[in-house]
Amino acid sequence: MIDNIFTVLQFPFIQRALLIGCIIGVTTAFLGLFVTLRNMSFYSDAISHAALAGIAIGLLLNVEPFIAAVVFCLLIGLGTAFVKQRSKVSIDTLMGVLFASGISLGIALISKQQGYQGDLFSFLFGDILATNWNDISIAFVLGLIIIVYLLGSSKRLLLTTFSPDFSFVRGVSARLTDYMFFGATALTIALSIKVIGIVLVTGLLIIPAAIGKNMAHSFKQAVLWSILASVFTTIIGIIASYYIDIPSGPAIILLGTILFVLTSLFQRR
Amino acid sequence: MPKHKDNHSNEEALVHTDHLSLRYGEVEVFSDLCFTIKRGSFTSIVGPNGAGKTQLMKTMLGLVDASEGVIIRKYERSEVGYVPQKIFIDPTFPITVREFMQVYLQPKSFWTNTSLPEFDNQLSIEPLLQKQLGRLSGGQLQRVILAAILSTKPSVLFLDEFSSGIDPRGQAELYGYLHRLNERDGVTIIMISHDIDITTQYANSVLCLNKQMVCQGQPHDVFTAENFEKMYGIPLTKLQRHKHHD
Image (tube, rainbow over all chains, first blue to last red; front, top):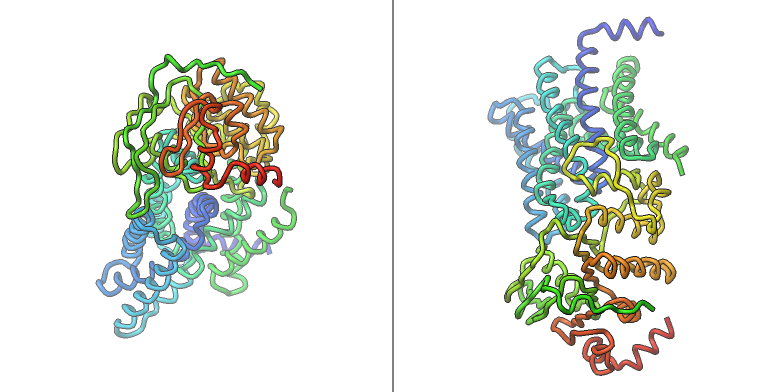
C-alpha cells in the first residue's frame, strides 16, 4: 500500500496537483476564517457562480478562461463592496441576485458557443490533475500576494468586524478594509476554481475554517489548524481520488466534511 | 452616592454645536441642537428610543456628517475612546482576550509577541487574558473593552449604552470606576444612558433629547416632571409606575 502511494507520488501530474492544491489550500484556509467570521459564505458562493460568466466571456473572446475569471471575479467583488456601502439593499439580497444572474449569464453565453464544451465540466467541478506549471506559477504568485495581505491586514479585518465605528476611532478605514477583503476573496475564489471547480469552491473556503474553529482556543491556533486541515484534506483527497477513481474536488470536500463532523463532535467546550 | 465635583465649570469647551441638525432624506433624526460639552465633564445624554442619541454621538465623533448647523470639536481623534452600542462578537470564534487587546492596540501592525500594557488592577483583566472573548459574561466583556480603550490613554470617553445587560452590581462597579476616572484623572465622559438613576448619581451634566433639545443642565435641575413628560411623552407618575413594575 505504502509502496503504491510512493509510486503514485512519482507521477508528475500528481506532484503538480499536490503542489497547486497545497498553495491554494493554505490561501483558502486563512481567508476562509474571515469569510466565516463575517458570515460571508453566501458571498463566496455568489462570486464563484458569477465566475462562470467570466469563464464564458473568456471562451467567447478567446482569452484564457482562468484570466477572464480572475478579472471578472475581481470586478464583481469590488462592485459588490461598492453597492454594499452605497445602497440600503441587504447583503443577502444582493448576493442572491448576483448568484442567479452570474450563473444565468454564464449559461447564456456558453450556449452561444459552437461545438463541444469539454472545458465546462472542469470549470464546474475542477480538474486539478490537468494542472500545468503555468497554473502553478500563477497560483503561487497570487496566493503569496493574498497571504501577505492577510498577514498584514488580519488585525484590521478583525477590528472592523467587531465594529466599523470602533475601527474608525483607531484610525482604520472600514471602507478600505472591506474593499480589500472583497477583492482578495474574489481573487482567491477565481484561483480555486482550477482545483475544486465553481460548484464546490465555497467548501474549500468554509470547511477548513470550520475545522480550525472547532479545534482552536485562540485566533493564531485557528489559522494553523485551518491551514493544516486544508493541506491534509487536499493531499489525502487527491491521492484517494486516484485510487477510488473519482474527481479530486469532491474527494477533498468529502474528506473535509468527515473531519468537520468529527471535530464538531469532540470540539472544546 | 458619589459627590459631584463641578470640575468642568471653568474648563474649555470640548464640543460645541450651533443649530445642529441631521436628516436622512425626509426623516429627521435630530434638529436645531445648541449645546456645549466642557472638557472634564461627565455628561449623560438621555431620551427615549429613536430620540437621535446614538446619531448625535456619532456626529460628535465625526462618524456621521450633520445636515445643517455647526459643530466644533476641540479634540484630536487620538484622544478618543469609544464604546459603540453594538459590537459583534461571534461566540464561536476563537479569539482570546489577549489577542483582542493586541488587535485593538495595534490594529495596523503584523502579529508579533509584543507585551501588553499594564491594566488597571481595578478592572481585573489579568485573569481573563487567556479566555475566549466570546465566552465572557456581559460584565467581563465590558471590562475588557473598557481596559482596551483605556490602554490608549484617552482623555475623552464616548460610551453608547455602555452598561445595558449588566446586573446592578456590575453596573455599580463600572460606573464607580468611570466616576473615579473622571474625578481623579480628568477624563471627559460622554455617555448615552436610559438609566435616570445612574445619570443622577454619576453625571454632572445632562442633555435631554427627543429629536430636539428638551433640556440641558445639571441632573437635579433638569429632571423635573415637566421635562420628563416632554421627553418621554407620558407623565412622570406613569414612568415611576413602569419602573416599579420592572
